[in-house]
Length: 197
Picture 1 (cartoon, rainbow, N blue to C red):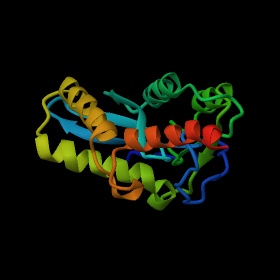
Picture 2 (tube, rainbow, N blue to C red):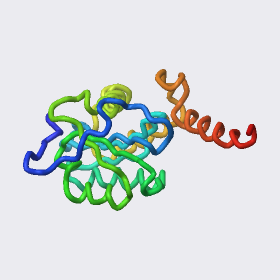
Picture 3 (cartoon, one colour):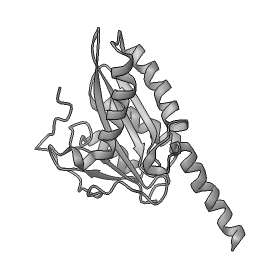
């Protein structure tokens, strides 16, 4: 199933990431994407927003439809959870899916002071980190624990997995520690800096 349906008539934001999915601090670069899951009652869709600094999932949503509202809900959760400062240079990167280049999504990013960034058409490398998280989600939850009866079953499993992923899953690219631990270490180091000076 194809989830990215680009709207060629819609003007697109620039690609501000250029496949560089590292960030010097939390709330510098988020990536967004969604995937689909087959259930006994039809497909459901799962959207994620990931902070690239420690690969922490900061927003997610499960929906029966792949409309703009559902990716906006994942973004709202990230905004509520992270409370980024407007104008602090946060970039939110996605593919060219119609949901992510919609007027409503773009306006919400602007309201929050977040710079939009969109990769090229038909190139999963341009959103590789988000694609990686989708792949881990499918391998560690969806394929391992299915078949899935309902949206509610997928939603509960996603809730459990996101908590485990953020707080207990060891990730090699960030030093074989969980994302929450990597962020805590960053903030602890920041707090220690003025003391050393």
